[in-house]
Length: 243
Image 1 (cartoon, rainbow, N blue to C red):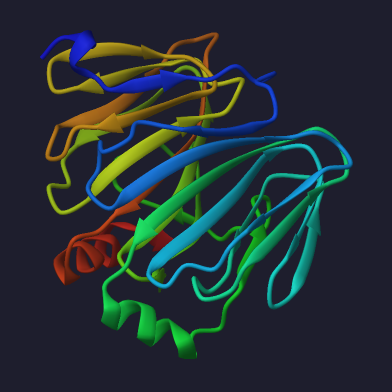
Image 2 (cartoon, rainbow, N blue to C red):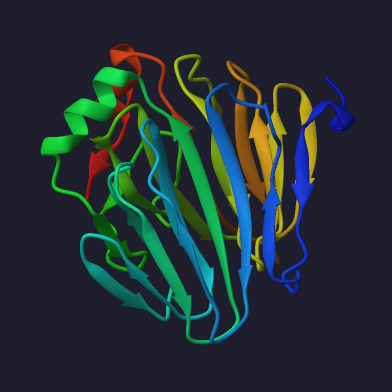
């Protein structure tokens, strides 16, 4: 594998308002989008029958309005039922990452009884530990893996020198999205791939991957998991231990 084999997109934090698709077709059923909203503007995302929308506020200040309203001026997640429209209004220039995730007909029907919207700030997300990370690494379960169908989102935050040990999870397909301050080295099989801020990339399915953080570096990124079957959920039950 070569660095050029890693599918990634690097975003401008000052990107203009509008919608930008990211890594189309890279993970079956998963479609990431980058949204820029100018302060005082808004957008309504129409209801979909079978596509879940997960919104993560990267920067700025917005109000989400679906079944309930939630306003945030910090990193936060908002997920409503795909059968409801969601209006997003920006109080200041704001940037959002949206993940659209195709559901089966049964999954969409089962969500009718789910306690949605699911929403919380990044800072309040429950922390967990796993065997691949050091004691100083902070891991958060932003969308725990048994909240939404075959989907989970979390984060990793640490500073150098530190190591997220290489590991494999062939039952999870995964994107990483790095926050602006992120500066670390991805370890993918025998490859060392620099990952700076404002980058979304696909961790190749089944690869042996980890992260090295040098003395003056930091790692701060989201992981976004797509889980094909129950065995993937059982794997996360095993390795994600609540703090």
